[in-house]
Length: 82
Image (cartoon, rainbow, N blue to C red):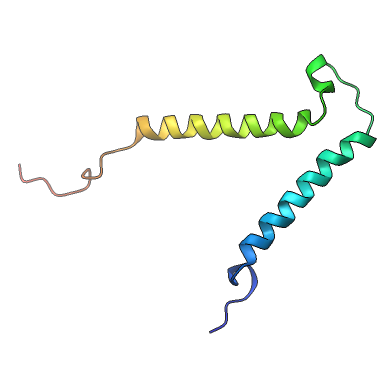
């Protein structure tokens, strides 16, 4: 049976390339957009891109820490003999 749509072979690679192209275009378009920065750091070129990247990395890090703290051991649901 032939896989179609997103499950097709090589489709994931094409989506990543398209995603990277859209991100690069969005950052490049910032050169032609006038921003009114509230703070000095907001006037740095590409601020929105790297701020979002750092925020996402921070959320992922916090989620991994919470997952490690709240995780149950692998043997939690096994039958106990006592």
